[in-house]
Length: 199
Length: 199
Picture 1 (tube, rainbow over the protein chains, first blue to last red):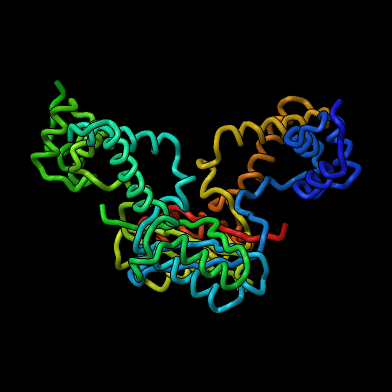
Picture 2 (cartoon, rainbow over the protein chains, first blue to last red):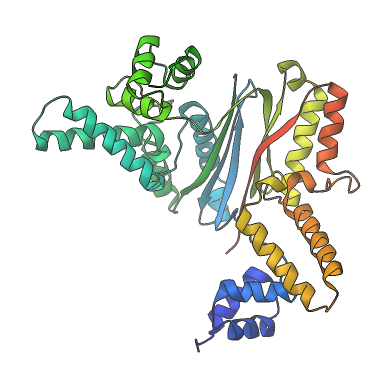
């Protein structure tokens, strides 16, 4: 039988809002499996809420931008470590600037780590085919494909994009620079961009 | 060989921004398969843009709401049929009201059609287990499970929720009612809700 630690009980309690003894019992019954313990508590009508996927633990603020024609909307979550930094003018200016940038530059992902494997493979295949048509040696081809992949990331990943208002500034560098200045980790957690276009 | 119609060429042209003759040739080469034709055009360096998933065809407007503490943000897309309706005060009031509602009521899905099959199955299983403990006849059990499912939808689906400011008004009815009044289909296309919570 798996050991049920205080940490496990605490974690389950945070997720379900149930009493300590109920959490402990549910974990013992399910051999320490948290997902099963949640199901067990729910079956008994003790745990109620379904998990909210939209929560992130830390400080920071939300920013939004609606384009003047009303057809483009952006919502952005920018995290930092303390509420103090989250309320500084510089932090807010960065958030507003990033929202406008997203509206204009249409990024699809936050960073290149977020590009799904199949999309990445598809891109590589296409670049390889394009490059083959050039009839270059293999070493050269590899470098060309790498270059094309870099420029794909610059097109679709927010952190790799150049700031629309200052085309020499990379978004990632803008964030890092403010982070150094304010002495806190600043993280661009997530964004969405909606657009209504004519059929 | 599949027939390449004018409609197919037009659709490919819209997606790729390539010339008519290039689109036609790509479709003929790929036997009318649009996905392959796009890949073919991309391999030749003719088509560039990756598809934007954030576009919807029709009129309407974006709405956003940031809670006064800066920790909750909502972005909402409300569609209608003409730009005229999209600019009416009533349409805008509805959009603003819905944003505030979403911030307060934390819906997870737009309608119960958006609840993933596995989530739905999981809920049903839990309700069935809960109901079994009551020791009621099967017919009664079925009705109880149905009732619990209805209340689950009212908890997590925006269209099934009751408006936070007027607990007798269902969100779906509010939209239908404005739709009748303005004589146009009004569709709550999508929304996101971000929230920063303490660890």
